[in-house]
Structure formats: structure tokens, C-alpha cells
Length: 74
Image (cartoon, rainbow, N blue to C red):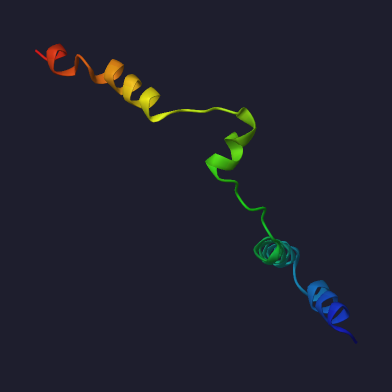
């Protein structure tokens, strides 16, 4: 009797609710062992956009956003 046959033999001896529990556990083990695709970095996701943001652009945007900040508070 090989391993697969032994597992099937034991599975068939279990009540239905325990068979479902064993199936859930087998699915958990399968998910744990399968490789998940690597997540791409934000830089990698944006490489095809061909966006060139310069330090001056960031400084200008900051000035627009925060330029009147202290004056707006009452």
C-alpha cells in the first residue's frame, strides 16, 4: 500500500464531517506550499508610464499645497 492509498483508506474510515475537516486541512497545506507571485514594487509598476518628475516640480507642488497653511488657521 502506497502513501496515497493509505491516506484514502483512512479518509474513508472517517465520518463525513471529519472528511470535510481533512479536506480543509489538505487545502490549507496546499496553499501553504504553492508559490505566490512576487509583488512588484511601485517603481516597477510605473516604469511604462514614462513620467519624469524633477525635484523642482515637487518643490513647486509643495509650495502650492502648503504656501498659505499658517494663514488659513483661525
